[in-house]
Amino acid sequence: MSDALLPFGRGAAPLAGRTILQIVPPGEAGGDEGATLAVAAALVEAGARALVASESREFAAELQAAGGLHVPFPTGAKSPLALTLNARRLVKVLQAEQVDLVHARSRGAAWIAVRACRSLKRPVVTTFVGEGKGSSPRTSFERAAAEGDLVVAASQYAAERALALFPAAEGRVRIVRPGLDLTKLAPEAVSRERVAAVRERWGVAPHERVVLAPARLISARGQRLVVEAAAKVNALGLDDLRFVIAGEPIRQSYLRELDALANEQGVKALVTRAGALADRPAALLAAAVVVIPALDAEGVTRTPIEASAIGALTIASHVGSARETIAAPPYVTADERSGWLVPSGEADALAEAIKAALGLGASARQAIRLRARARVAETHALARMTGDTLRVYAEALGR
Image 1 (cartoon, rainbow, N blue to C red):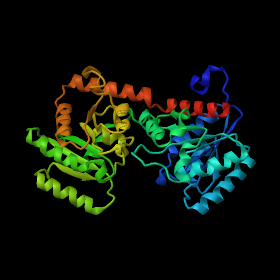
Image 2: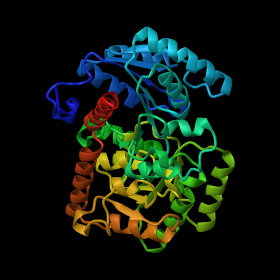
Image 3: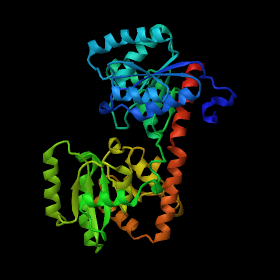
């Protein structure tokens, strides 16, 4: 058994023989089923009994294959009546399965878990979801995410936001960064045929270098800045470029706005719109540069982590937790750079960063790619995430 499963260096896994229940909402509702499954597998390896409450039947099969047990539960319910009924239902589950600890991975799950666990005097871990600005909590539903015996945040930035919104959580917040299966994001694991297929779907010529902006098409993700930056880069005389904006739109009118802006800026031929990435590793490898020009912290998703993990030259807005993923001046020297951070909302700065990335020589590009991969391997490896999570569980049980 790895040291990651031996919290506090005791030499024996304190989770062995324990029953841990994770509650996860459906994936389409924001539930992180991948992380839940990985933690369940780590619990089984540590000798614990891993239960997961969810609505997904497909997820149940994956969980069973990992040695866990699925508990059918309406985790997506949000109405006050449904939450109250689910809290009572959860009490029965905890008693029947003799659950020692619950990890609630959403606000709704936190509301019912806190009430069920308090009534039975069982420890509960909650996850603070989201890294946006947020507002002061007004209801018990909004406060529930910070009422766990320990509260998990996905980054230093998220931890600071949680404490700003919930000062009473001081001393109970723990950082557990997202974990990626880095084997799937290794460049050598992606065939040339997959990369060529992606470029063909985009309609990109063999000689064209791609600047890829992969994100859901909403204004907060900064696609307008990509179009404006394309015009500025084009004016600088850089040729053989194609700007690919890849993502599904929330509203069709936004697509028309982007098309009109591209036409207005004179770069309609340089900007290609594509759907959401079906093969993310191949798409990230197919790009010369990946840009994440989010306008605010909520626009910072896992994309910069994935792009850095595969070694893409990555440019992100300096908002939210981007600084924790990408090492860039002034926080490190130029020789330690693993990507670029640019001021949010500034097309000129984005264009300059794109120009700088495209202008690097082969050795400089390779050095940045290696540093980016090494940084993500250190901070966002799947084994680190599961180990950190199990340490939180052990600490909560010890409290």
